Image (cartoon, rainbow, N blue to C red; front, side, top):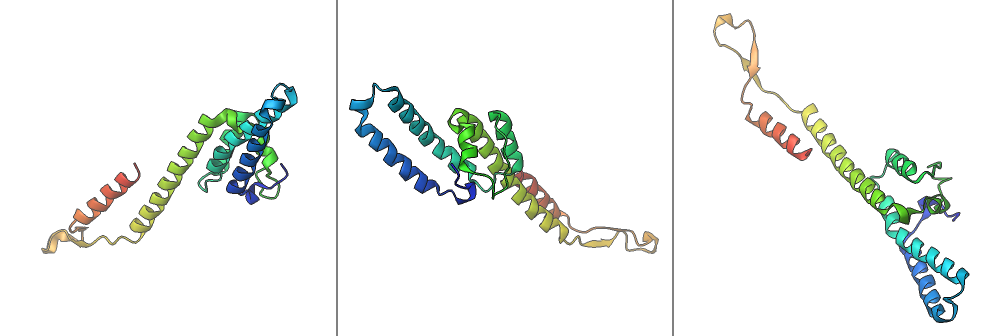
Amino acid sequence: SQMLWIDLDIDLIDKGSEKWLTQLNDFKEELNNLPPFRKVQDRVVGFRESIPLMANLKNPAIRQRHWDILMAKTGIKFDLNPKLFTLGNLFAMQLNRFKDDIDEITMAATQEARIEKELAKIVTLWSSKPFPMCLYRSDEGSDGLKILQDTSDVVADLEDGVLNLQ
């Protein structure tokens, strides 16, 4: 539980907990009637259910705001400083009780990251997009008034940007 979140290897944790569960199952017949055995087994099963949720929370799209939402849902708050954030913090949240919330948060974070990426592309495109201009009239009364020439490329890029943000 003192392992730092940043150092967490999901595959290693998964294999280790699977080994624990296998060992517990080997003793199930002899020890199943003992309350401590059932308590340990329940904890290992709960932990195993939390592993996919931890994998979801390792998603690079998860930001501070998403952790804040999860902390509000679980009622457990802690410092997200990578030097202080441990597995013990996650264990305290009892993640297996909040599967639907975690799924919702990670899906939203992934969608937000996709939108942020698309928005950055749009900003890059429009900040360097040339707008070809021509004089409004070619006669002497134009006073230098300019209008856009062909707007089909501009409209196409605008429509693409809108579609990509949806």
